[in-house]
Image 1 (cartoon, rainbow, N blue to C red):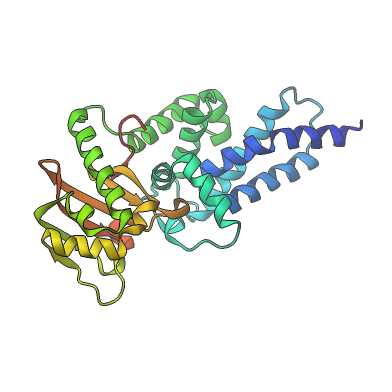
Image 2: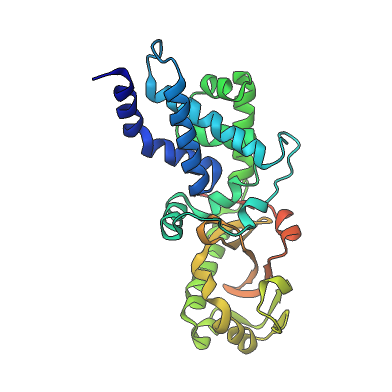
Length: 294
């Protein structure tokens, strides 16, 4: 077997792992495929005679390719990046929608959305260390930073992704159950089932961008709100729970692309108030983190 065929075989053996790594870093199946293809091209051109760990070499190259793509996506901004959500809110541009939807769900829709709020270096450091267990000295080399800086980047990313440790976990779990029940009810389209999870004087507010034309941006009372949900609430099947501005809410993110945040106020086990946030400027200013245990 010649050297090139040996390299090709090793690459194919690692293709799936490289694709999974790239997808978590980029949040797009099409871009992940491009990153993996670029990794192959670099392998094909490289002198690997001195490489003793080819899978590790491939992971390093793929990570650097993804880092370059993330930086290019955000105009080269790095530490000053403010969490632009544009890549998550634009329409898909090709690829297999069903396959990408399955990939997004396997990773976690909320995680994909939240990862998109990190700077490129934070995202790479977090994915490599917290998901794939890559040591910080190797991450530092990929980022062209010191090992200490790589640790700080991963720590900062973790703080942005995970819920604070001082959360009232009992309350969070109670509210998670209420929101989950609301989500299930919304998917049924049955006004009676939906109303059972709403306070009698519930209020629903919404950005105009969250609603079909000519629908009211404010609805009041369980009957009126349940009627609105029965007509348009089936999008909740694309939702995943997350902490939004410190409260349990839902992120509606088909294929991992953020479309809508649903922010709840809960009292006595019922939804007292909720808001549909869809304006891109407002979405960018929401604090979104994974729920404890996620």
